[in-house]
Every structure is written in C-alpha cells, then in structure tokens.
Image (cartoon, rainbow, N blue to C red; front, side, top):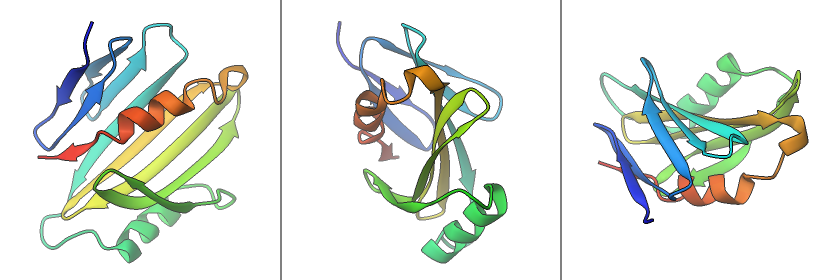
Length: 132
C-alpha cells in the first residue's frame, strides 16, 4: 500500500495507507483505521487581504477557552498557533494556521487513555500540508 494524496480545492496532504479521509459539509475528517483518533480540518477564506499573525491570534482568543495555552506553530507553509488540552474524556490538539488569505482550523481528538499514541503520525501527516 502506498501513500495517498488528499486534495481539496485549496490544499492537499499526504495520508499513510492506514489513514482514511472523508468530506463533511463544513470540514474534512481524517482518521486512522484502528479508530484511535480523528483529525478535522476546516478552511476559512478572507474576502480581501491576508491573515496576519495578529488576526489569527484574535480569532484564537475569540474561539478558544480563556485557560488554553497557545504556542507558535507551523504546519509546512502555514503559520499560526497550537494548543493541546483535555476536555471531558477527550485529549484534543488544535491548530489555527494561515497562509495568505486562507486560515485552517485543525483539531485532532482521541480518548484520554490514547493521548499521545498518534501524535507522531498526526504531526507527520500535517507536515505534508501544501496550499494549492
């Protein structure tokens, strides 16, 4: 089995054979076949101009919980912020990353007892992100 390329209208990424992808109404879901966790990617576009770091940070502050700690992040050519936390019984990692007029909101979630199990694979997948 070989790597497959998940391509949307705006970006693409490479998926290892043990991962699947499907399109939802507002986002793309990516998961591993053993059911450990799931990546969800939503794409937002600016009508005019580009997403600068200040705008990305404003969006993060509006959309996230006040107690979340955010750090600088880059996913391939996208730059922004990332956070990880536990909510209810889920371990969650989030990224708000932008390139030009495109902002991606990426979440990875799994059950708390599986926390960290897919982190390396998730990082590897997200590092293949390419704007089209």
